[in-house]
Image (tube, rainbow, N blue to C red):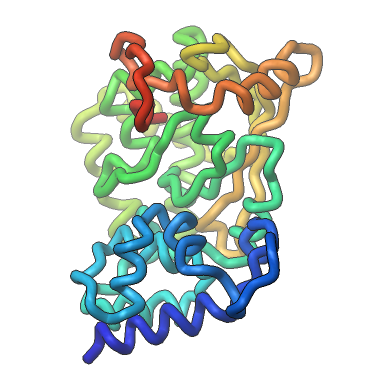
Length: 298
């Protein structure tokens, strides 16, 4: 019964959205209001057949990741997203992880940033959604769960994560991450399990993190100038700017070319190169034979 209700709910939300609301062209005259099923499937990263089955109430139980993707594609409010999880017999995720609800207004702004890399992350540096240029610049950070979903966790536990920046910048990046994490943890409730678990884990496995944590530096990363190593274009120097949500738990992060460098031209090339040459750190460049490109985890 719930799956039939879920299908009806998805259909009702799809029909209320205009293509322009999600950055799609209006195209030829539409016979139905709202988005087409194939457009929702595209936005959510699902097959058209699978999404059709969901709307019919006949599909298999969607995963938590798929529910989060559908909620973002359909611009659901927080209450609507939670309702969708319950219709799918899935637990409503705790805010802060990779399935966190992204405010529709922030998604709308991200959708309008078509000429610059941009993504929405949590205050613990869990990537929630990226535009195509951000994927091309820093790698596809989707599909990660648990502690590894946080780039801060990966920075201190996985050497491959550091290939995103030149080695000369690693010390300053580490200090900035630790100071930012302390500020984010302090803004949260003192008993917040996600921040507390991350800090305890890093203190237990990373001597570098432990040493920096003892310095008690605290500072949000509001804007940075950093160098990013792209596997095809080389080092790109960018300004990283942040727009914080009202509660501070999410940030819209976008990248602009650093003044006095050739980064503007490199970012223009990034749109051409896309993700076709983006590879996993430490993996040799593949031969292009079509199909989906390998992913580089940022």
